[in-house]
Amino acid sequence: MAGGPAVGADGEPGPDSRADVTTDAARLGNNVPEPRVTTMFDSIAPVYDRMNTLMTAGSDGRWRRAAVRAAGLRNGGDALDVACGTGKLTAALAQAVGPQGHVLGVDLSPGMLDQARLACGELPGVEFRLGNALALPVADGSFDAATIAFGLRNLASFEDGLREMARAVRSGGRVVCLELSVPRPRFMGWVYQGIFRITAPVAGAIFRRRAAYSYLPQSLDGFPGAEEIAATMRRAGLVEVSFKRFALGVVALHVGTVV
Ligand SMILES: C[S@@+](CC[C@H](N)C(=O)[O-])C[C@H]1O[C@@H](n2cnc3c(N)ncnc32)[C@H](O)[C@@H]1O
Image (cartoon, rainbow, N blue to C red; front, side):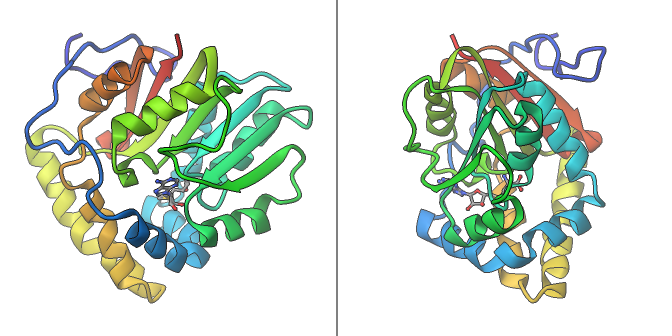
């Protein structure tokens, strides 16, 4: 179905949706400079997980589990979690690959990585590394799957970030992207973004992080829709790209295969 969501009967990402459209309004990357993004995440690191639970009413765990399933990992496999933050998805990936497996979490923010090491440092096979998603500190084809959760919209180039993830994954492996999205139709999207613009800083104020949480709705302004992210994944060299939407389209899960 051209341009529509592709959702399989089992609720996992379904058949390819072939909409190679990039609207003029859609940004190709985040225009907030990297040092500012890093400083902002360093400042919210201690409250990040509690804010997520508050703002998603606890649904973020379910979305991350869907991302792990989409990665198609086996016991003993190798996974890369890009923009891993406090390591929530990293820990879920570690469970999927088991104690014989290996999961590397990479992030630009030392503060977020400190929290990740506190939360998951003891998990077998889990490692964290400071690094940029646009120049991943890993060898070509060294992972069975690479994931990025709520990280893509922070990157200076979405396509370059996805291409880097594809480079890190073996042929036949998966690249998975879980990210905020804007609900459709357009009217719903405007309403949602209006509400988000007000609620995010207010929720941030509870943890004395109002300014930092103003960045969140800003980072969604002009962020490409789910069809456009699918098209960007194809341009990054991925095939069999599919996606599904969660929570009325507030979140989208994309998966593509490395050639
Ligand atoms: C919203 S958090 C998501 C964290 C985690 N993946 C999750 O699911 O909760 C975004 C993360 O992206 C990281 N980040 C932003 N730009 C990055 C870049 N260029 N390279 C690596 N990490 C980056 C931030 O430091 C932050 O930890």
